[in-house]
Length: 365
Image (cartoon, rainbow, N blue to C red; front, side):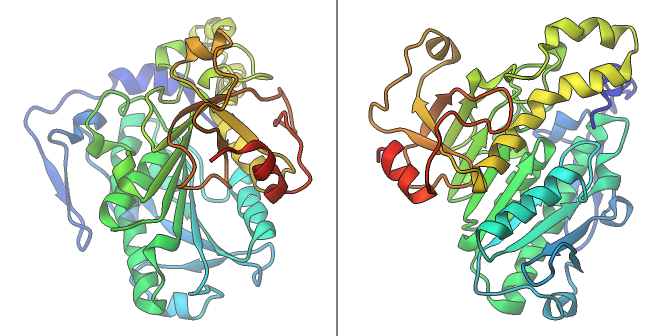
């Protein structure tokens, strides 16, 4: 899933810096510059929508296990699909080197439809995400966000959907794509960031990454916080209304400790590194997917830091606990929350008879 050697080596040194800002324009989506604050892509400009072959896969209860392709600027593709205009619409966006038909995305769509009758749309930007140059993929996220935002506008034009009923879920680079969508679409209902990518985003302007202004409610799960040099892919900074840090936000239980595998990286054992290092980064997806119909609640306690959590100081709800995952809501307490999980499925430590009963028992408003 992750071509770590390319990220760690080629992607950091292969691109010569371009002196002076440049831009490229893809109408009707606008122009994209590499000037500040968008210098986070190391002078790379994004590929065109056509080159990236961005596509949208619509899953509904009517379509069963298959999907229908809908297209931006093509109202007939929407009208002739099973898209429902009076229900919630959920977008799911993959990250670097992945694609719109990856197992976890299809499974998540299925779990959501099992829980409720909604529209689920998988965003496939495989060609744009597949670059061996990570920074080119970073640049491409802006175009993916613009094209997806156009589809959302088309869904409103065709059927009058409410932007407040749109929920965008993104993993890694997909989290920041969700942020670009939210910058374009006013009043977007919710964005969920699943371990948002850290490299090229952690210490940059809020305009280039997901932030609370991108939707009415932004919730984030951090499962691989750190830096690339510690073999972590995620972002440590709290960037949402509610930020969850399971197990401190790094080195998830059941995943190999990355420090034990640095030698694999420098000695070129790619297969070993790929399976080991990506484990914690992917775990945010596992937690979120399990939360949909998993029979438990990921109750999370307010906590100011990882050190406070590790010191055992965050075991009470104080002014209110929050629920991590699909069922968290905007009226739940905001801030940073920590929790402990198990090392394998089921990951939650608290069982429940039903979601409603679980929230009543474990959530304090």
